[in-house]
Amino acid sequence: MIITSIETFATEYVALVRVRTDDGDEGWGQVSPYNADITAEVLHRQVACHVLGMDAQDIDAVTVTVLDREHKFQGTYLYRALCGVDTALWDIRGKRAGKSVQLLLGGNRSEFPVYASSMKRDITPQQEAERMLALRERFGYHSFKFRIARECGHDVDQWPGRTEEIVRTIRETLGDDVTLMVDANSGYTPKKAIEVGRMLTDYGVSHYEEPCPYWELDWTREVSDALNIDVSGGEQDNNMIVWKQMIDTHAVDIVQPDICYMGGITRTLQVANYAKRAGIPCTLHSANLSLVTLFSVHFMAAIENAGKYVEFSIEGSDYYPWQNNIFAPGYEIRDGNLLLSSRPGWGIDIDPEWIALSQHRVSYHGSRF
Image (cartoon, rainbow, N blue to C red):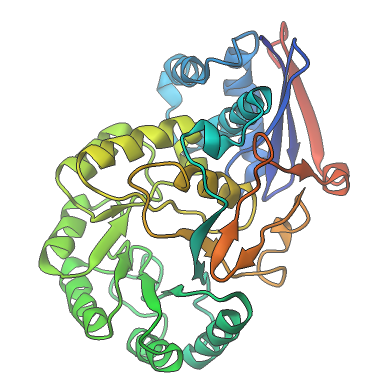
Protein backbone atom coordinates (compact mmCIF):
# COMPACT_ATOMS: atom_id res chain seq x y z
CA MET A 1 0.00 0.00 0.00
CA ILE A 2 2.17 2.80 -1.35
CA ILE A 3 1.52 6.50 -0.77
CA THR A 4 1.01 7.97 -4.24
CA SER A 5 -0.16 11.53 -3.59
CA ILE A 6 -0.40 14.11 -0.84
CA GLU A 7 -2.73 17.07 -1.26
CA THR A 8 -3.22 20.19 0.80
CA PHE A 9 -6.29 22.41 0.90
CA ALA A 10 -5.14 25.53 2.68
CA THR A 11 -6.37 28.80 4.08
CA GLU A 12 -4.45 31.14 6.34
CA TYR A 13 -5.76 29.36 9.44
CA VAL A 14 -6.55 25.78 8.42
CA ALA A 15 -4.97 23.34 5.99
CA LEU A 16 -6.46 19.91 5.44
CA VAL A 17 -4.42 17.07 4.00
CA ARG A 18 -5.58 14.21 1.79
CA VAL A 19 -3.36 11.17 1.33
CA ARG A 20 -4.03 8.58 -1.37
CA THR A 21 -2.48 5.18 -2.02
CA ASP A 22 -2.05 2.86 -4.99
CA ASP A 23 -4.74 0.61 -3.49
CA GLY A 24 -7.32 3.35 -3.79
CA ASP A 25 -7.29 4.34 -0.12
CA GLU A 26 -7.98 7.93 0.89
CA GLY A 27 -7.44 9.55 4.28
CA TRP A 28 -7.94 13.03 5.67
CA GLY A 29 -5.79 14.84 8.19
CA GLN A 30 -4.91 18.37 9.19
CA VAL A 31 -1.75 20.36 9.84
CA SER A 32 -1.68 22.61 12.86
CA PRO A 33 -3.92 25.68 12.63
CA TYR A 34 -2.62 29.26 12.32
CA ASN A 35 -0.35 30.22 9.42
CA ALA A 36 -1.52 26.94 7.97
CA ASP A 37 -0.76 28.08 4.42
CA ILE A 38 2.91 28.37 5.41
CA THR A 39 2.77 24.94 7.03
CA ALA A 40 1.29 23.50 3.84
CA GLU A 41 4.30 24.80 1.93
CA VAL A 42 6.61 23.11 4.43
CA LEU A 43 4.64 19.89 4.01
CA HIS A 44 5.22 19.79 0.27
CA ARG A 45 8.85 20.88 0.51
CA GLN A 46 10.07 18.91 3.53
CA VAL A 47 7.59 16.12 4.27
CA ALA A 48 5.93 14.89 1.08
CA CYS A 49 9.21 14.44 -0.75
CA HIS A 50 10.27 11.82 1.82
CA VAL A 51 6.90 10.16 2.41
CA LEU A 52 5.70 9.59 -1.14
CA GLY A 53 6.40 6.00 -2.15
CA MET A 54 6.47 4.75 1.45
CA ASP A 55 4.16 2.12 2.91
CA ALA A 56 1.05 3.89 4.20
CA GLN A 57 0.59 1.23 6.88
CA ASP A 58 3.96 1.90 8.52
CA ILE A 59 3.21 5.23 10.19
CA ASP A 60 6.12 4.85 12.63
CA ALA A 61 8.55 4.57 9.72
CA VAL A 62 7.01 7.62 8.05
CA THR A 63 7.57 9.65 11.20
CA VAL A 64 11.14 8.50 11.71
CA THR A 65 12.04 9.02 8.05
CA VAL A 66 10.80 12.60 7.92
CA LEU A 67 12.56 13.59 11.14
CA ASP A 68 15.78 11.84 10.12
CA ARG A 69 15.87 13.39 6.65
CA GLU A 70 15.07 16.82 8.02
CA HIS A 71 17.26 16.61 11.11
CA LYS A 72 18.55 20.14 10.55
CA PHE A 73 15.04 21.59 10.53
CA GLN A 74 13.35 20.06 13.56
CA GLY A 75 11.40 23.18 14.45
CA THR A 76 7.71 23.72 14.99
CA TYR A 77 6.74 24.05 11.33
CA LEU A 78 8.14 20.62 10.48
CA TYR A 79 6.09 18.96 13.24
CA ARG A 80 2.99 20.97 12.32
CA ALA A 81 3.33 19.76 8.74
CA LEU A 82 4.07 16.15 9.67
CA CYS A 83 0.81 16.08 11.63
CA GLY A 84 -1.17 16.45 8.41
CA VAL A 85 0.27 13.27 6.94
CA ASP A 86 0.23 11.32 10.21
CA THR A 87 -3.43 12.01 10.92
CA ALA A 88 -4.42 11.21 7.33
CA LEU A 89 -2.62 7.88 7.58
CA TRP A 90 -4.47 7.06 10.80
CA ASP A 91 -7.71 7.80 8.94
CA ILE A 92 -6.68 5.35 6.21
CA ARG A 93 -5.72 2.74 8.78
CA GLY A 94 -9.12 3.04 10.44
CA LYS A 95 -11.05 2.88 7.18
CA ARG A 96 -9.16 -0.23 6.03
CA ALA A 97 -9.86 -1.92 9.36
CA GLY A 98 -13.48 -0.77 9.46
CA LYS A 99 -12.83 0.81 12.86
CA SER A 100 -12.76 4.30 14.32
CA VAL A 101 -9.34 5.62 15.28
CA GLN A 102 -10.15 5.34 18.99
CA LEU A 103 -10.91 1.62 18.49
CA LEU A 104 -7.56 1.19 16.74
CA LEU A 105 -5.90 2.86 19.72
CA GLY A 106 -7.65 0.55 22.19
CA GLY A 107 -10.66 2.62 23.20
CA ASN A 108 -14.35 1.78 23.03
CA ARG A 109 -16.33 4.79 24.18
CA SER A 110 -19.37 6.55 22.78
CA GLU A 111 -18.69 9.84 24.59
CA PHE A 112 -16.04 11.61 26.64
CA PRO A 113 -16.33 14.42 29.22
CA VAL A 114 -15.19 17.87 28.11
CA TYR A 115 -14.44 21.12 29.84
CA ALA A 116 -15.73 24.38 28.39
CA SER A 117 -12.60 26.33 27.51
CA SER A 118 -12.56 30.11 27.13
CA MET A 119 -9.90 31.75 24.96
CA LYS A 120 -10.77 35.33 25.91
CA ARG A 121 -9.03 37.94 27.98
CA ASP A 122 -10.85 40.90 26.43
CA ILE A 123 -13.93 40.15 28.50
CA THR A 124 -15.01 41.33 31.92
CA PRO A 125 -15.26 38.81 34.73
CA GLN A 126 -19.03 39.30 34.92
CA GLN A 127 -19.46 38.76 31.17
CA GLU A 128 -17.35 35.61 31.32
CA ALA A 129 -19.32 34.25 34.25
CA GLU A 130 -22.66 34.99 32.58
CA ARG A 131 -21.77 33.24 29.33
CA MET A 132 -20.43 30.22 31.22
CA LEU A 133 -23.63 30.04 33.22
CA ALA A 134 -25.65 30.10 29.98
CA LEU A 135 -23.48 27.38 28.45
CA ARG A 136 -23.93 25.18 31.52
CA GLU A 137 -27.69 25.49 31.17
CA ARG A 138 -27.57 24.70 27.45
CA PHE A 139 -24.96 21.92 27.26
CA GLY A 140 -24.66 20.60 30.79
CA TYR A 141 -20.97 21.41 31.25
CA HIS A 142 -19.58 20.42 34.63
CA SER A 143 -16.09 21.89 34.14
CA PHE A 144 -14.82 25.26 32.91
CA LYS A 145 -11.46 26.85 32.12
CA PHE A 146 -10.80 30.57 31.79
CA ARG A 147 -7.82 32.87 31.32
CA ILE A 148 -5.94 34.67 34.05
CA ALA A 149 -2.78 36.83 33.96
CA ARG A 150 -1.61 38.34 30.68
CA GLU A 151 -0.14 36.10 27.98
CA CYS A 152 3.64 36.08 28.56
CA GLY A 153 2.74 38.77 31.06
CA HIS A 154 5.89 39.20 33.16
CA ASP A 155 3.72 39.33 36.32
CA VAL A 156 1.39 41.94 34.82
CA ASP A 157 -2.34 41.25 34.73
CA GLN A 158 -4.50 41.91 31.67
CA TRP A 159 -5.73 44.86 33.68
CA PRO A 160 -5.15 45.53 37.38
CA GLY A 161 -7.10 43.17 39.62
CA ARG A 162 -8.69 41.15 36.80
CA THR A 163 -7.31 37.75 37.87
CA GLU A 164 -8.58 37.94 41.44
CA GLU A 165 -11.93 39.34 40.30
CA ILE A 166 -12.59 36.72 37.62
CA VAL A 167 -11.75 33.79 39.89
CA ARG A 168 -14.07 35.09 42.60
CA THR A 169 -16.87 36.05 40.20
CA ILE A 170 -16.94 32.76 38.30
CA ARG A 171 -16.90 30.68 41.48
CA GLU A 172 -19.70 32.73 43.01
CA THR A 173 -21.76 32.62 39.80
CA LEU A 174 -21.34 28.94 38.96
CA GLY A 175 -21.30 27.63 42.51
CA ASP A 176 -19.26 24.98 44.24
CA ASP A 177 -20.49 21.99 42.24
CA VAL A 178 -18.46 22.76 39.09
CA THR A 179 -14.79 22.15 38.42
CA LEU A 180 -12.80 25.31 37.67
CA MET A 181 -9.50 25.50 35.81
CA VAL A 182 -7.35 28.44 34.78
CA ASP A 183 -4.73 29.13 32.12
CA ALA A 184 -2.00 31.70 32.80
CA ASN A 185 -0.31 31.31 29.38
CA SER A 186 3.26 31.78 30.66
CA GLY A 187 2.20 34.80 32.70
CA TYR A 188 4.24 34.68 35.90
CA THR A 189 7.59 34.35 37.59
CA PRO A 190 7.61 31.62 40.27
CA LYS A 191 7.05 33.98 43.20
CA LYS A 192 3.98 35.57 41.61
CA ALA A 193 2.71 32.23 40.29
CA ILE A 194 2.82 30.72 43.77
CA GLU A 195 1.04 33.75 45.24
CA VAL A 196 -1.73 33.46 42.63
CA GLY A 197 -1.82 29.68 43.04
CA ARG A 198 -2.60 29.99 46.74
CA MET A 199 -5.48 32.30 45.92
CA LEU A 200 -6.71 29.77 43.35
CA THR A 201 -6.59 27.03 45.98
CA ASP A 202 -8.72 29.13 48.30
CA TYR A 203 -11.41 29.20 45.60
CA GLY A 204 -11.19 25.48 44.88
CA VAL A 205 -9.58 25.80 41.44
CA SER A 206 -8.15 22.38 40.57
CA HIS A 207 -6.04 22.94 37.46
CA TYR A 208 -3.37 25.65 36.97
CA GLU A 209 -2.09 25.68 33.41
CA GLU A 210 1.25 27.08 32.25
CA PRO A 211 1.83 29.41 35.22
CA CYS A 212 5.38 30.28 34.11
CA PRO A 213 7.02 30.74 30.71
CA TYR A 214 6.82 27.23 29.26
CA TRP A 215 10.50 27.13 28.39
CA GLU A 216 11.44 27.68 32.06
CA LEU A 217 10.92 24.14 33.34
CA ASP A 218 12.73 24.84 36.62
CA TRP A 219 10.35 27.71 37.32
CA THR A 220 7.33 25.53 36.64
CA ARG A 221 8.69 22.78 38.87
CA GLU A 222 9.18 25.30 41.67
CA VAL A 223 5.52 26.26 41.40
CA SER A 224 4.20 22.69 41.25
CA ASP A 225 6.32 21.71 44.27
CA ALA A 226 4.98 24.63 46.31
CA LEU A 227 1.27 24.24 45.62
CA ASN A 228 -1.48 21.74 46.42
CA ILE A 229 -3.07 22.21 42.99
CA ASP A 230 -2.47 20.37 39.70
CA VAL A 231 0.00 22.33 37.58
CA SER A 232 -0.15 21.46 33.90
CA GLY A 233 1.89 22.28 30.81
CA GLY A 234 3.49 21.09 27.61
CA GLU A 235 1.15 22.34 24.90
CA GLN A 236 3.96 24.20 23.12
CA ASP A 237 6.54 21.43 23.30
CA ASN A 238 7.49 18.94 20.59
CA ASN A 239 11.08 18.00 21.47
CA MET A 240 11.27 14.56 23.09
CA ILE A 241 14.30 15.57 25.14
CA VAL A 242 12.25 18.37 26.70
CA TRP A 243 9.36 15.98 27.32
CA LYS A 244 11.68 13.50 28.99
CA GLN A 245 13.07 16.21 31.25
CA MET A 246 9.58 17.52 32.07
CA ILE A 247 8.28 14.07 32.97
CA ASP A 248 11.37 12.67 34.70
CA THR A 249 11.62 15.69 37.01
CA HIS A 250 7.84 15.95 37.53
CA ALA A 251 7.88 19.59 36.50
CA VAL A 252 4.12 19.30 35.95
CA ASP A 253 1.35 17.22 37.47
CA ILE A 254 -0.50 16.86 34.14
CA VAL A 255 1.07 16.75 30.67
CA GLN A 256 -0.75 18.59 27.89
CA PRO A 257 0.69 17.82 24.47
CA ASP A 258 -1.09 19.14 21.39
CA ILE A 259 -1.42 16.51 18.65
CA CYS A 260 -0.99 19.08 15.88
CA TYR A 261 2.05 20.74 17.46
CA MET A 262 3.59 17.35 18.24
CA GLY A 263 3.50 16.03 14.69
CA GLY A 264 0.50 13.74 14.95
CA ILE A 265 -0.95 10.81 16.84
CA THR A 266 2.21 8.71 16.65
CA ARG A 267 4.53 11.08 18.49
CA THR A 268 1.83 12.14 20.96
CA LEU A 269 1.41 8.49 21.93
CA GLN A 270 5.09 8.41 22.82
CA VAL A 271 4.60 11.29 25.25
CA ALA A 272 1.43 9.80 26.77
CA ASN A 273 3.08 6.41 27.25
CA TYR A 274 6.16 7.95 28.84
CA ALA A 275 3.95 9.95 31.20
CA LYS A 276 1.95 6.79 32.03
CA ARG A 277 5.10 5.04 33.19
CA ALA A 278 5.77 8.01 35.46
CA GLY A 279 2.24 7.99 36.84
CA ILE A 280 1.30 11.32 35.23
CA PRO A 281 -2.07 11.85 33.51
CA CYS A 282 -2.37 13.26 30.01
CA THR A 283 -4.99 15.89 29.10
CA LEU A 284 -4.49 17.08 25.55
CA HIS A 285 -4.44 20.70 24.43
CA SER A 286 -7.11 21.33 21.77
CA ALA A 287 -7.95 25.00 21.78
CA ASN A 288 -10.12 25.32 18.67
CA LEU A 289 -12.84 23.38 16.87
CA SER A 290 -10.96 22.36 13.77
CA LEU A 291 -9.96 18.68 13.50
CA VAL A 292 -7.57 18.93 16.45
CA THR A 293 -10.47 18.45 18.89
CA LEU A 294 -11.64 15.40 16.93
CA PHE A 295 -8.14 13.92 16.99
CA SER A 296 -7.92 14.64 20.71
CA VAL A 297 -11.18 12.98 21.77
CA HIS A 298 -10.33 9.79 19.82
CA PHE A 299 -6.92 9.79 21.50
CA MET A 300 -8.18 10.54 25.03
CA ALA A 301 -10.92 7.92 24.75
CA ALA A 302 -8.25 5.25 24.25
CA ILE A 303 -5.18 5.96 26.39
CA GLU A 304 -4.89 4.45 29.86
CA ASN A 305 -3.67 7.61 31.61
CA ALA A 306 -6.23 9.97 30.11
CA GLY A 307 -7.13 12.96 32.26
CA LYS A 308 -10.68 13.67 33.31
CA TYR A 309 -11.79 15.60 30.24
CA VAL A 310 -11.04 16.90 26.76
CA GLU A 311 -10.60 20.62 26.15
CA PHE A 312 -13.51 22.02 24.15
CA SER A 313 -13.36 25.62 22.96
CA ILE A 314 -16.50 27.68 23.58
CA GLU A 315 -15.50 30.34 21.04
CA GLY A 316 -17.80 30.40 18.03
CA SER A 317 -17.86 32.08 14.66
CA ASP A 318 -17.59 35.56 16.14
CA TYR A 319 -14.14 34.74 17.53
CA TYR A 320 -12.86 31.97 15.24
CA PRO A 321 -14.83 32.25 11.97
CA TRP A 322 -12.28 30.03 10.23
CA GLN A 323 -13.16 26.92 12.28
CA ASN A 324 -16.72 26.57 10.96
CA ASN A 325 -18.18 24.30 8.28
CA ILE A 326 -15.04 22.27 7.67
CA PHE A 327 -16.52 18.81 8.18
CA ALA A 328 -19.67 16.90 9.05
CA PRO A 329 -21.07 15.69 11.31
CA GLY A 330 -20.02 18.52 13.62
CA TYR A 331 -19.31 18.28 17.31
CA GLU A 332 -22.22 17.43 19.59
CA ILE A 333 -22.17 18.07 23.33
CA ARG A 334 -24.70 16.34 25.56
CA ASP A 335 -24.68 16.62 29.37
CA GLY A 336 -21.11 17.89 29.28
CA ASN A 337 -19.88 15.02 27.08
CA LEU A 338 -18.61 15.07 23.50
CA LEU A 339 -20.26 12.32 21.47
CA LEU A 340 -17.99 10.01 19.47
CA SER A 341 -18.84 8.52 16.10
CA SER A 342 -18.32 4.80 15.53
CA ARG A 343 -17.72 5.30 11.79
CA PRO A 344 -14.33 4.13 10.46
CA GLY A 345 -11.33 6.43 10.66
CA TRP A 346 -12.17 9.90 11.89
CA GLY A 347 -15.82 9.30 11.00
CA ILE A 348 -16.33 12.54 9.11
CA ASP A 349 -16.90 13.93 5.63
CA ILE A 350 -15.12 17.07 4.48
CA ASP A 351 -17.38 19.91 3.35
CA PRO A 352 -16.94 20.40 -0.45
CA GLU A 353 -17.83 24.08 -0.11
CA TRP A 354 -14.95 24.60 2.29
CA ILE A 355 -12.64 22.74 -0.09
CA ALA A 356 -13.76 24.97 -2.98
CA LEU A 357 -12.63 28.07 -1.07
CA SER A 358 -9.17 26.72 -0.19
CA GLN A 359 -5.88 26.80 -2.06
CA HIS A 360 -5.15 23.38 -3.54
CA ARG A 361 -1.76 21.81 -4.12
CA VAL A 362 -0.68 18.21 -4.75
CA SER A 363 2.59 16.30 -4.63
CA TYR A 364 2.83 13.00 -6.52
CA HIS A 365 5.04 9.98 -6.13
CA GLY A 366 7.95 10.31 -8.55
CA SER A 367 8.08 14.11 -8.36
CA ARG A 368 9.76 16.16 -5.64
CA PHE A 369 6.98 18.73 -5.53
